[in-house]
Length: 336
Length: 241
Image (cartoon, rainbow over all chains, first blue to last red):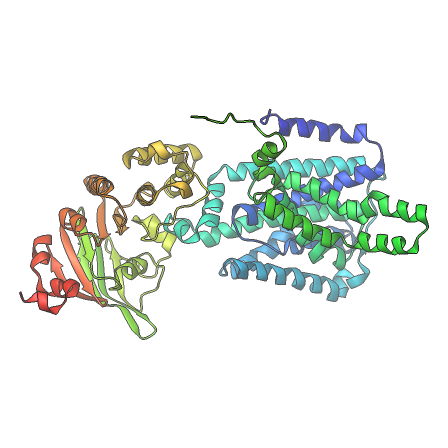
């Protein structure tokens, strides 16, 4: 059963836009698939290699801006950004990793946080290139959401399979060794600096491609959106943690959960509070509903606390624990 | 030419000389013991050899080549394996995966690495524990995993840092037997040890240091009778009795 569930899931995902014609749900699924890609990238560097990144938005935004600038500056299709966005993100990751992988643990995480902010400021201030806060507007290629859906699905499948291949190879063993003990890894002949760079570049490439997809799909970006700390970088971490750090399908599950939670808050519990406010006509509930809708970050915080307390290895990592909680196996008491 | 040589090695931590002008040569195929009281600089010496610290001055030669300042991973690939006194298992990996990760330093495909790892696990008699997570091993087997992992990097010179500490008597005999088998395979060994039973039975030559300085070098028999060694371990009054 377990062996076939990924194939079953893929089958359902392929059929999804045929079965569900509603644009809103198709839009949500495209976002989920995009987050699968970003989450997989984050999982490689933070989950498997143990170098926690708070700066995924730096790579995401670089990818998005590469795609956008292809249109505004070079006049070629933004779809080229799907490849070159990933490469541009690697071009950022390379010098950053070269310098900052001398730092360990929390210090590296802080450096990634700084990278995030530096990139956001560059995109804001360098107006001659990026148009600053005005952002970049690109004509969308397709009217329908279905082509975007399948492109996102293709990208998500490629990243999950890609990560699986990498983790089954020498690279994978080296990444996990570095996470477990960097000094021991060095003593086993692992060039830890080099392999941390490789891992970061894999993550940057995937995240950059997701950024380019975002540019193509949304048609509009500005620095506050694509270099956003809480909407991109923190969200990437949440996708990883909720799904399960260092598990192949963790980002997949995490992406579903996090997009759902995000949407749950954004719509005020799927319109529940708006409905109550309309029903009672109370101003107070209208105001309350407005606050709830803006409180999704608070909701994320509570969710993370719950996940860390109850499922420290995430939903995928602690799947057996969840199954046991829901279907408790009755064990016979041994009586003497 | 000796397989391995240290020349006038010095390491200062601030004003403290942890290793002070130590020189020795290790010949191919021998078991070379390194002894000294706690804090005398033995582990620092290993950390200098495998470049966890940079020496303040002095040179380290391996097979005639000056390897002073080479990166840790490069030293491993040249053929110097090491274990850690405070064991460093890759906790959330299985024992087999620990050894496979080490084997990748010599082979490139997963298949070859798996074969080399299994071979090494069998040699070190840890194969029955291969699917256990490394963090759930008891201390005796963790120490053995350290040796297994180092052996999977196919070293010509193996640095063993207190691999017998904390073992019970039967494990101790097994550890001695394993070290002898490693030597019989043609691997040269430098061993740090406090347990005299181990160091005296297996070493060909012993080098004693105290406060980072050489106090004596010779066969186990010579060391047992050396006044300088007795003084370092037991105090001045015993040295003359």
